[in-house]
Length: 251
Image (cartoon, rainbow, N blue to C red; front, side, top):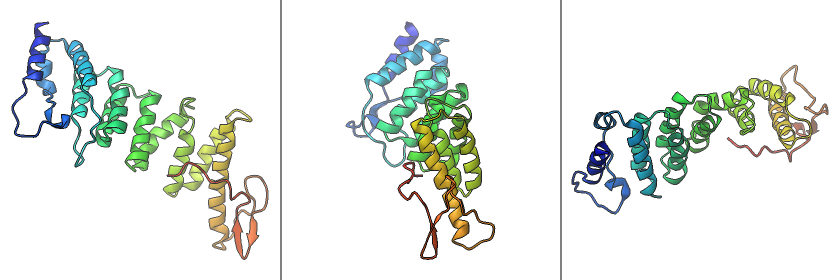
């Protein structure tokens, strides 16, 4: 209890700063993790729990500016250093930083810390990948995490395989993307909505490969679509039999 009282005293008697006090980004002070670990006298879990509750109580909605990390990132980072196996810190901390604080780099770091200790966790893999690809436009870096979820046949995140195939196609690996997604498609439940949507993604992947070959008048091109029907040929150009099958997943 003496240790906790000392930490609380240091927390609320922060050094004076010549800065405005209207923003929580500027007023919340976080102790150095190494110093705090020494002061905690072995009570790292107790102190991390205190900081977790304190952070939730004083959380705010202000977006970060100038690509700087928010004060909440430094708190979540501190908690991770004190108690690396505090799962909720990564699960909710990363999500809060990404969606509420718009601290995308901070969220990515928190997810990375979490995956160091919970590498097989589907939630952390998905949100790490989603934040990288959809928010930070770093889809190439996100690919290994989507691939992992696809290999695990994650029921919670069934779109991982389709997203991975779209990323590969965008990187120029269309044949590889088709093969990997097709193998996953074969294992899906019949008559499921997911299987139908995945078929449409596969159809569009094959269409892209075939039409690129056909309309460049290359040799040995495939004239048949995934349903076994000849492609439409109008005004000297090969076209899809299903122009309405536009994939909703755009990367």
